[in-house]
Length: 398
Image (tube, rainbow, N blue to C red):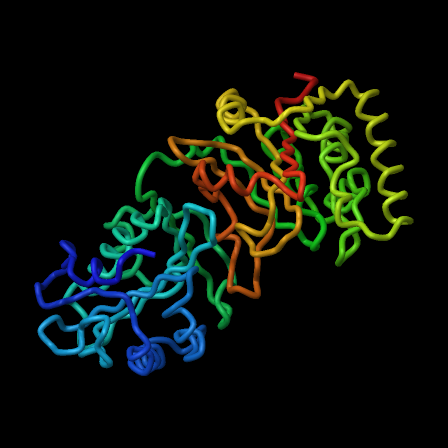
């Protein structure tokens, strides 16, 4: 994490007055944070328990603004001084994006530039954490907040009807903290998986939405594609999709699919203890291999590098990547994400999984910049470090 001492010693250049100190929150701030939360919001409040967790969570950054001339403004202090406001960001491990989950300013501190100072220091801290995209949601009727966000470089992405607990709408906004964002015409339509086992079909539908004119993703098609591609019995749920199955499903829909796998098949059988399940999976994968050959799908049994992935993406391709869910989602399961753009140091992916139990929304899973070194670590699965990618290109018919 970014140094808390560094944060508090650095007075934000965006602060309206020199007597505002920004620092990491500590346990002694929780009572003050809860009190501010209760007077600031009528619904969707952060609970005391959540504040206590966010103070130390590796997937959160909670900053507070306090009067700099008062005692208790050091991290070691047991008191907060006069709490002027706070800003809370959440982020996934292994990604380069962050989400502004909540921000509040005390009524007595309005007009002093507290929110601007918090956001300025938050951006500095996020960059130290190698986070390069900051996103947020805001009530479209909250004109002062939207004006502030726009002045800081945030741009609206989409309107979200009935987003908040009270039924009100939201506007989703985003800001690049460094580098260039992908061109709008490169970003596929996002589709979150509707089951625990259809991450692969969801990635394929997102690819179809960009490469197949007029294609409309649906839950019905998600299951139809899964029925073509699935071979895998999982420990939980019905079963997922292995690499050859994704390539076959793509080719049968008219996409030019190209498969890269670092090991020979059958795939993803290392943890299957039941011999009957293993036999079924082997037969299903043998059938898919025959279908792949009939469809003339190129199969490269070699480890695709990130540099080669970048070349394919720069040439207009998209790629479904099989990753270990452990690094990004803390789940030791195979998981598919869709890579569609890149810039210096990052590959942009749509992750079809949204973890509602961790207060995630699609904002946390869409256009996620993954640093190259993190992708190198997560783009593998199992004891044999299987690296698999299905490259999708323009429609064969064109």
